[in-house]
Image (spheres, one colour):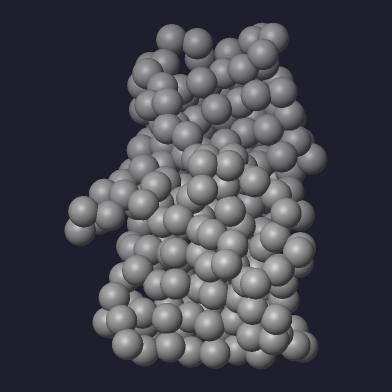
Length: 254
């Protein structure tokens, strides 16, 4: 049995919303002090994986009789709907997840313990979905509002965008259209040894996933993975983040 209790129900709901643009089912994993929800989806022949990570300090209670990890498939649309029905003000959410992968119990109470709502959430065998690991080193960060505007404009021409960073600028390109932003102020920054530059391929599909996720952060980060894929990272809170990857999107140093 895994027991989870959350006070910041609104934050959890907002972090689940981008994932629902990809799939209604998530590969759920509890390992040591981290909980993750990972989804996968195919849109117009483009495959995307996205993982929401939630770290231990986010939870009021995180208790398991499993010494290492708890792994299952859950219906995140049921979890999101339950938070929508009950509201999130002055609410505690406790999730009881049994070992047999049948149904979890979602229990909403007030902060003083009065029962407000109880609902089942269907579970199933693990999906074993994984997002590639971050390679570290160089990364590019751009203002989230600027990213939403550029991604929306460029996706009208092509859903695959290239993000190229050099000494003084970051260029977003799709088909024959491009947008250039100087590396200055709060709009853009590059960390790591740039050398001749770095290029990330990013498939912004489904677009609503990227729009929703970027609304939870002030910046959008582009990293390389250990498998040479592009990772798009959204630092959605002090103890939460969302990482997305398309296996066909590559990154390279120029």
